[in-house]
Amino acid sequence: MVIIGGWLVPERTMMRLALALLIAGLFAGCATNVPQESVEKGAEAAAEPAVDPAAKAAFDAALKAMREGKDDQAEQILLSMTQDFPQFSGPQANLGIIYFRAGKLDKAEAAFLRAVEIKPTSAVSLDYLGVINRDKGRFKEAAGFYQRAIAADPNYAYAHRNYGILLELYMGKLKEALAQYEEYQKLTKGEDKQVAKWIIDLSRRSGAKK
Image (cartoon, rainbow, N blue to C red):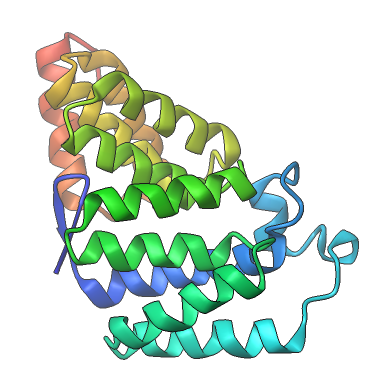
């Protein structure tokens, strides 16, 4: 299990989500002004520079190792990639995930910051930075990262949920938290039963009419 935004998320589920999103980052690392949503849907693919076959092969090997739980092996591949292909954000972001999973928050934060430096619209990296800053007690900074993640990709549901958790539990902004939970439920088609309960509770406590 992986702890994300105060939740225990099945590691396999989290890995599938993260890797599916971050593989796009490998090919979008050079285009720092391309919106995350466009990159992931391939709308800007023609505008991207050709990817070195060696880079793709190395990245695929790293993803395979991560799926198989071989994080040490994946880390070595990704570290080499950051030296050989510094223009891509994907290796840095995946290093961040590896370090986060291992509880190495300082190293994870540094890796995600490097990923965002390469690709400022990386919603996944920005969301992780929000979680890390929250866990370090830097709530204002965490809010800023969540807001940037949502601005980069309004359809990235986890940023809305994690921002809602910050607003409710750490900042006491109940109505704002409720809005984030509702957006998360909308994006995930209301499949999250726990968040549905949170919405009912927050509606009552915040005085919102449902």
